[in-house]
Image 1 (cartoon, rainbow, N blue to C red):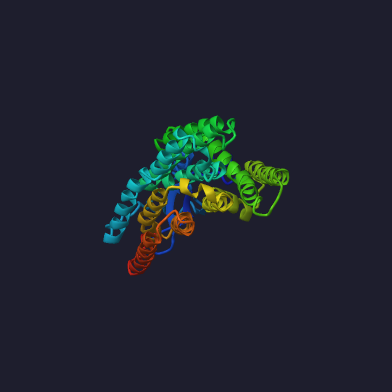
Image 2 (cartoon, rainbow, N blue to C red):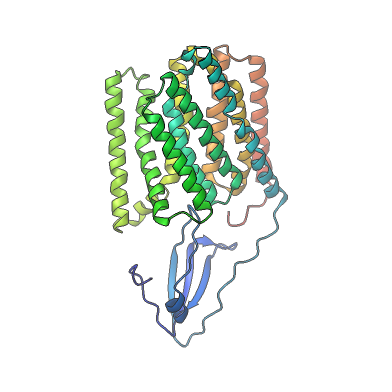
Length: 393
């Protein structure tokens, strides 16, 4: 197998030392494994790779006379610290607000639909919910790869609720009707495939196609999300906005497709390959960042729709992110930290501020909420700075 990939052919009687440069031990040294040439020829090289993980091996061949050291067994994990356990509990508690996160908005939407007041749904951008759906799928793979079940389940809940809201928007005409069944079928198929992957039953080729496909869709969705949302702010005509956005999306998709083809042929330079490997995380972060900005832009363009926005939804979103923030901070995961801070501040607090300024929320309620959030974040950052770093942070 190794020879087929253009590396080397193990030789019987020789020893081989594999140093995993991408995974270090507690002393900062590469994890090391040793195998005999005969074992490699007979059994191959078993390598397990979690989602979003990577192995970069440096291989050293030892002389026939050199003894082959026994394979190093993984060290037993150190006992969990109290802070590690607490952050894990808080992450699990975050499921509660996330489960009910979209329910107030869904109920408000149904109330307005039954009353025939469709205009109040105009402040809910279908593009924002669609890109949020895509970002949730990419984050779902990210968290399952880290074996973090609670945040992975929050993504599943978010995907389900986003689909319900998109169905409501399609019903009242604030979303192209043809787009909803396409998005819904893709989402259901994606959930099934992700579940099969967590059970180790997903077809590897199909899973790779899914990962590459979502990365390409995210790459193509970013430019249209920007131009369609902010084109009105720039006073562009609908025709100019549509042409610019979809042209930029097509260019981004074509560039991503070219990278996929070159990667499959093994012709990507090292630095570009590393960037492409992290594209899922980068694209998910970009979509996650754009989603609340899209919503705020729609609020600015449709201030009459502000009464149709649920303050409780924003508070629940803020609570869920506040419960998850300590875990990301403890694990030193930049994507997780940024995503939670962004959701707390821009995704929720700024929306509550807009509702307060437009008179849809009492300032006497907004002020204590702001103080509690600021105090909580400051305490978590201070307390985490006094805790030991997690293993292999």
